[in-house]
Structure formats: structure tokens, C-alpha cells
Amino acid sequence: MGGFIRIEKKILNWEWWSDINTFRLFFYLLCIANWTDGTFQGVTIKRGQRAVSLDSLSTGTGLSIRQTRTALKHLQSTGEVTVKRHAKFSVITINNYDKYQSSDTVSDNEMTGNRQAKRQANDTQSDSETTTIERIKEIKNKNISFEQKADELFEELWAMYPRKKGKDKVSKKSKRAILDIGHDRMVECIENFLTETKNREEQYLPYGSSFFNSGYKDYLPQDKPSATDNPDNLQFTDKGYPEGYYEICEQHGAVYEGSVVVVDIVKHPEWFPPKILEWLKTKYSFSTG
Image (cartoon, rainbow, N blue to C red; front, side, top):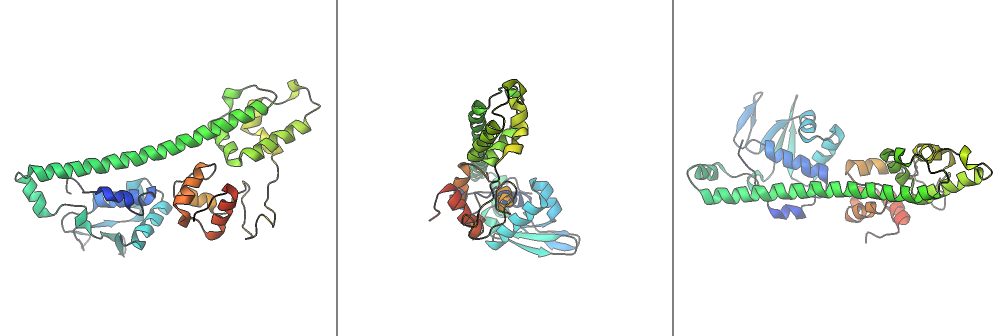
């Protein structure tokens, strides 16, 4: 296997750059592809090809089988790779492989003293590593932003709750679940609780930790969409999302609640079926046009 691959900076404009799973799979395929012709179980594997299975790709990339299959379909749809299936494995061909991997002649020149070319190749590799690290940081920052929003909403709701005991015992998981429910429903939830317990002394109310970890669920308003709000007859989950919406966000590594989600929707409206996209536009009041 060659010592490096070449990634040009224009990959930042590649249509799959922002799709984490698809980019990860493509980058992995570039790294494991044969750089010289060979054979595998009697099948000729040429330069730029690799004998693989979904299991091996899933293990190598850390993606689930479903995520791996979806990412591979993306790469096939835009002509980045072709797949030929055999009885026990598949052979994936990276189209235009020579754009990413130096030819044997270049490698020989490097071995015989073409230090300038080698430095340029190493610089290119460093650029690729840098952009990959930056993308990882971007994902981490998005997750941090989600956690911050969960904390901010929790602080606002905590201030509304009368018996402020056990604040530090409210888990991050519970805070994320509350953010998923949304500001308006949680405010109404607490108002429902206060109305029902208005004649009860504070000492007999549950601790705030008990309420926000699970007790609030008994006071959530029933927020099923009406026919007017749901002209396309979407089917909704218990959390109030259209069926399939959460799975789409999970597939693309996208946040599915809060203002952050609008960024992904505006950039990638093609991820969502038309009916779900229209629902999102109504919920968050934005346009993809």
C-alpha cells in the first residue's frame, strides 16, 4: 500500500463533503484501495479496487451496516465508485483513482531522490488531515451547542418550578429529552402541574430533580396535530415528530430539534421527503428557496 493519498482542497466543494458518513466511507476506501494489481480468492483486483463486504466496511469505518449501505449508495449514485458483487464479497472500484494516488513512476522517482515532489505530497496529506480534523471539530461544536441549549432551557424551567431541590441530580439525558419536547410544551407542562397542585403545600411537592427526571411526563399537554395543522396527513410519533424524521437526522448525523436544525435543513433540503420538509418549514418558519 502506498504511503499517502492526495486530496485536493477543492474537496471542500464536493457534494458529499458535508455528509459525514459518506465522506468517511469514501476516505476509508481511498486508504485501503490496492495501489498495484493483485488477486483475492482467485479474482483479479486491479489498482484502485478493493475486495470488501458490508461487515468489513462497517468495522473499518465505525459506521452501522445501514449507514454503510446508504453511504455506498450515495457514492455509486454520483459515480465516485462502482461495485461488482461476487458470491462471498464485492469488488469496489474507485473511479479516477489516479487523482488520489501517485502512479508507480512517481513513487519510484520519490524513492530515487525526488524530494520536492515528496514534500508536496506530504503537504497535501497534511492539508487533508487538517480538513478532516476541522470537520470533526465542527461536529463536536454542534454537539456542544445542543448541550448548551438543553442547559439554557433547563435553567429557565427550573426557575418556574416551586420546590427547588436536587438540581444537580437532573441528568444530561433528561435535559436532552426536555429539549426534544420543546420550550412551549414544557412551559405548558409546568403550568399544568402548578394548576393541579395549587392547593398543596410546597413541602408535599416532589423535588425538582424528581419532576425533571421523569415526573413531568404526567403533565405534558397532548400535542397531536389537527387536520388544519396537518394537511398532508403525516403520521406522528409520540414525541410529535413525523414518522421517519428522527431516522433521517440520525442517518446524516444531524440535530433534530432546536434552531440548530434549521442550518442542516437549509443546506440539505434533499434529505427530507417533501411532506416532512413542508412540516419543518411551518414549524421553524424558514424557506429553502
